[in-house]
Length: 184
Image (tube, rainbow, N blue to C red; front, side, top):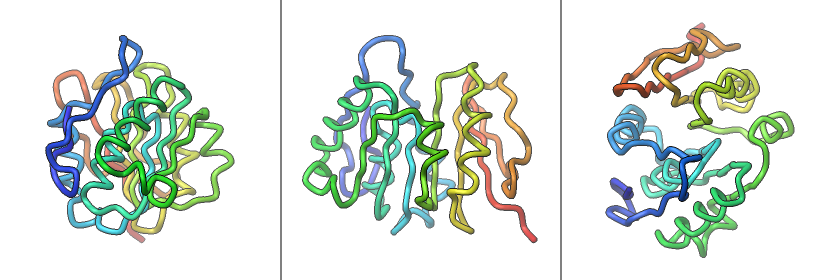
């Protein structure tokens, strides 16, 4: 696993050991960032259920202004912290990256921040994406974009509050649903 492009291009990232965490495939990561390549510069990002932190790190590498990394696992947060330091964002972590070990749904419920870009990749087949989406919508900026990675067979809603699914990408057994605010 590596950073694809930007300031940390080519840097290797470590993954969380064990079978509990499933890193996002590089082709999925490339597709997500290609879809928003002209929107990342200066964006405020959220990497929810962050695991190793690779999605948020990719965004920071491509010029995002900040990223909040959230995961309930101590091992995942430690791995994300090590990756941030390895790619050179460790010194700036207090300004640019915030790493929080907490339950993702509780974070969204209490959060008052606003994000331009959010990526959520919860454990599959537990209904967490379906629970997180309605909590995430009020935290998004007017031009915000939400990407939800899920198992291809999992059903995510076509609409969620003021957001509508605009695209569904499929990569074998993995799918990514992209949401944007409805046009008035």
